[in-house]
Amino acid sequence: MSPAPKASYHAIKAEVLERIRSQVWPPGAMLPGDVVLAREFGCARSTLTRAMQELAHDGILERKRKAGTRVRPTPERHARLSIPLVRDEVTASGAQYSYQLLRSTLRAAPAWLSTRLDIAPGTQMLFLECLHSGDATPFQYEQRWINLNAVAAQEVDFTQISPNAWLVAHMPLSNAELVFSAAPANDDVAGHLDVPLGSPVFVKERVTWFDGAPLTHTRMFYHAGYCVVSQI
Amino acid sequence: MSPAPKASYHAIKAEVLERIRSQVWPPGAMLPGDVVLAREFGCARSTLTRAMQELAHDGILERKRKAGTRVRPTPERHARLSIPLVRDEVTASGAQYSYQLLRSTLRAAPAWLSTRLDIAPGTQMLFLECLHSGDATPFQYEQRWINLNAVAAQEVDFTQISPNAWLVAHMPLSNAELVFSAAPANDDVAGHLDVPLGSPVFVKERVTWFDGAPLTHTRMFYHAGYCVVSQI
DNA sequence: GAGTGGTCTAGACCACCAA
DNA sequence: TGGTGGTCTAGACCACTCC
Image (cartoon, rainbow over all chains, first blue to last red; front, top):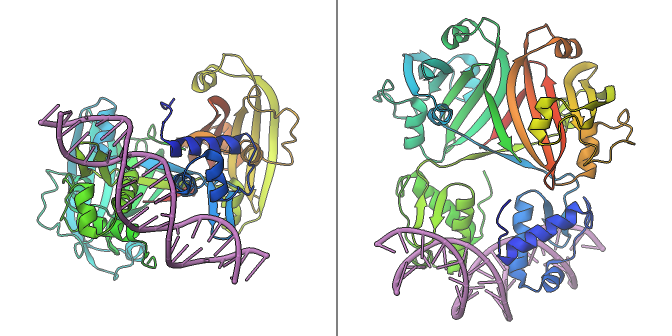
């Protein structure tokens, strides 16, 4: 598939992977030292090292000083899961994206939220409800809490820009925790997504942090056909 | 949190991230060239390059020859999603893991499957149904198709070892495509997971490839409380 | 064509940790 | 404490791509 990288460290990575797949170096096996391997491949140690470090970074190998390099017994594979904007998800399917702010109020943080975000109980927060649609069909219903102590969002007009789009632009490089689950639609969700009460909906929950402070908590509800795709 | 890496390329990464967060280099901004930055940081160009390449690999920066380096307008964040074995998921919650093979038959691949795996329609495949439980409570119900043309699994006794555990051990470094979704429990699923008909279940679908050949297709159904957690 | 990032090298010193 | 990987350097040449 990929057009055969010419760089020698790429070639080395490929060769090492091939030896693992063909059980020359089975899971758990010890590899020769960097110096030896570099001599075998006829390259500088730094080149060999770069290949090995990337494989270690990818969870294929395990490197320890003095102990040497070994194939991870159970390769710790990680799926790379991109985090799309709702707008992009909708337009990618060819539909016309539209966004609607359903509610915007100040509310005291409920107990579960203050625990989840590790903030003082009863803190005043901005609570938003939004609906994202494709061709006038509800696509995602969103319940969002914004921590006004960490985000200067009081003056923002969220009828014009979705909270996610605004936050991405103004708070780059925040960290987040994602949770995916399945749940029955309650009154709110069923009404806004236009699905039967109790029918399965896909739920994403996301908590976003910036520099140690919680920024926002979001629950996103999708109609049943929705799915998340990822590659390993 | 992390104990302040001393390596200079780590320090450079941290400094660049800090400048992005503090809007010195806002999203979309152009950075000085590698040579200039290396002079500013007082290090060799290779050291600077390593830091920048890792940031580019992480989706923070965008590097192009001649064009230079810029901050990605919408940082393409990737969640790292580990792929656990069911056994580990169950025991992690403190429960006693048990596994049961419900069915093992040879069947012709249905149309949807041969399309999905890109194999000849009607190919004979091994079809398995498995139940994974924690403390005798159903945890995951699994429907699996195995491509016997790519996997020598005819002689394996899947009553003793779960197909996933066997495949992981015998087919290292395979690629996979993951799909998460929510669906209503049908007769099969409701019966095996012991949940009401039509109630929401979390579904994982996984297709595994090795060296271009499809190995196995799996649908995994979880009880409603289940969720997938991921960090960015 | 020229400027930028991509890669390689040879050598050096350092930091960690199993024996 | 010795061997292993981790990092840095100075310099070189290459490859891509924008102008």
